[in-house]
Image (cartoon, rainbow, N blue to C red; front, side, top):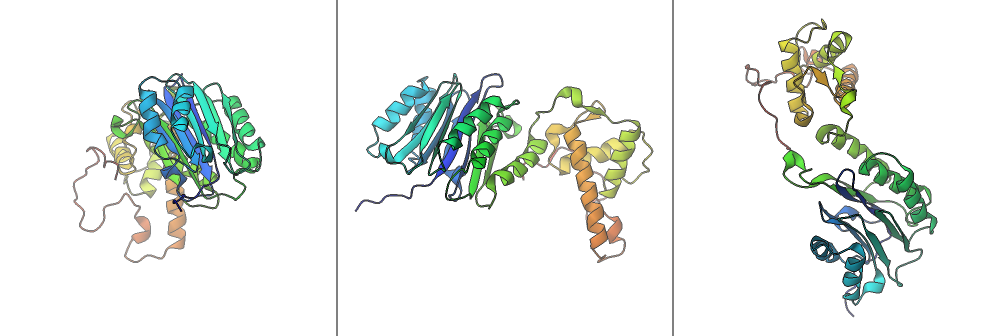
Length: 335
């Protein structure tokens, strides 16, 4: 008897945002590490989701066809017609121009189906019902913002309608944009996964929040906050708690304060959020406050193991550390 890999219930969305030049896939499933199987995307080319009895060859083959300029409808037709097991497959594709198409084989486990809209396709199998994909489509179309918000809205809407009728386990989001990856070295603008969790969509949102504040630049420039007066005092206070700053919280954004803030940004992997105009992004200030509050809470719970331990934050020099400041040097990379 020929080997048949397991089928898994999944709901996903593929979409294109022409205004921002992004293509993406978001998915949830009662299946371990769904992000390793379903999502495929290349900037300027398109995005693809392969699921049910997923044919992972659809990923590279589909992107190759899309890269040749073929529309989504033709890509779906070519991939499925050449597949003897197509009736067990499910596929969603969006092309370079936002054309979308989907396929649901007749042998996919019920409920299985898809909805194709303007610039997107929602598909799912082993679902509670048709309302899962229709709710996803409605949420995507009615949610403002860029692709991350709209994809999360679609996933959450699908889950509220029951989602995968076997339950929840993993989720993933892949969004590509030209030179959108780390240090502009790839097109993987958003690439996050939750491989095993009782509430994978909520956990994916938590991970994205950290990913967003650390690596992305999506905030409105009009929201930049000048670091002066009370803001400077608060920042100095928080930096002092974390051990990056040893002066008084006097509200003057002097060289010592700037050096301490730069050190905090570099050690927090916030190099992409650094500013040289005396302003800061609200998300960075929020993160600094959260870190400082967590450090205060830690000190109230932890007994000192060495003299003065409770007065030392994570930014302070450890034993054997060089005394010369390295605050002005570059970041620490992605590690």
